[in-house]
Length: 555
Image 1 (cartoon, rainbow, N blue to C red):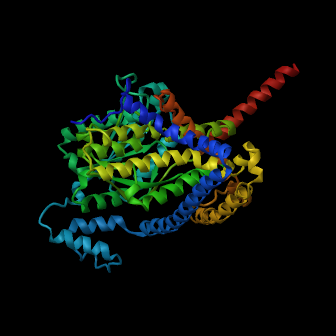
Image 2: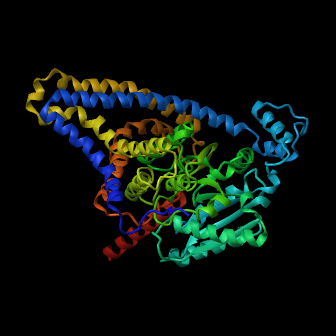
Image 3: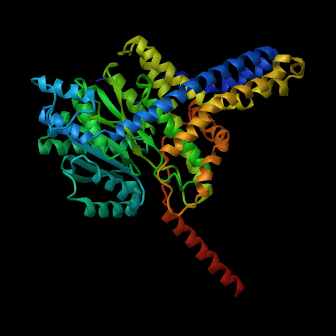
């Protein structure tokens, strides 16, 4: 079998070159602006205008996909997926005397009804859910498991596994045992799996944890004599809340596709669980990431695995589950699957959400830091660039050349633009005037800031659309907040340039520079997950400490 793992120790020279490439290009984009400004301000002006026009075109495309994607999401949430599964089970178009409102579904049922074999029955399919946890509190995990209980999918066809870390200590052990007592007889199978610490050839991260749980799941299926081809595995973080129809929807898509082993299923991650509770900057970041996930779902040729996703168990067994060598195992799973199946691999968008928490810790400053920690981990997906390059540009290539090239350049472009574009668009127009005295005499250089500003103002249409759609998708405002909190949801968007620079660009430069210097990130920094109750309790503890201290000082 082809070696699918990222190297943990020594890299080849070619691998090191491609590790360094994202940072070289991201920093090089800034250096190029400075150099062209020194040599000829007109060259700098042309360079920046090309970037600005590109950003403008992309902003229009993003606005379009955002509107269409939101509508697609709304329509998918209205579909009775559980009833659709019942139709597939009966292999009949005359179920319950209903009038079909979905022409495509009617065609699907008729196609399967005419088929002799090849399409499994829904009753033959099981959905396994692996919930990864490290040190999250009971309340967070309980909410996630309750969301599984409340889905429209039959609980007796759900296999739930809590994958927890030995390094989480006694507190995590106690939380897991409480969950075991609470939900033990709720699903077809409910298991807890402790991932031992310090296993060889593993970085400290989620990949090793869920891989260990996946191997335990394999043993359980063998004992129960269940075919891995009839099991769909979904990985969830501890704060994830699947849409009630998610598993019905995934099962429906899984049955309909002939080449199901070579597919994975990607829901839309929306960071809205606690969106009303988090600080304004975190709301901007969370909403921006949510809409980017909607946009990605509208472009299947660029869609990649992210956070929670589903994949057939037989495919996972064949490729030895997930990577244990990277802290970004979710996005890397796309490349791992793509190369294992020699390019015969696609991601199917699932247009219902899995709700996740926006970043929130128990203090404001810790929340700001935790947000950066999360984004720098995501940005470390740049570590996939050398992984892909050395499998496309060398004799190791087992995928079609054109498909490999286009995917590589999209991957590289995504990481480079994430880093440098916010910096160039915000400050680039002033650079020629700051560093070159002769630029003040150049008409092009003097008009450049105004030209860039005009393009940015037109591109603000996308921001207006984002604000409008945000209010269409937000969960109801909690009763603990007054109406002025809604006004804050509008005013928060003035922070967007700040978050783009201080979070998106900075985290990308941080992660890419570490790759450039060979300072690899080998530990998964868990994002802190606090609730409003936990924050109030922490405030109360700090208040009692201050009162006690003041009493002591008075004495």
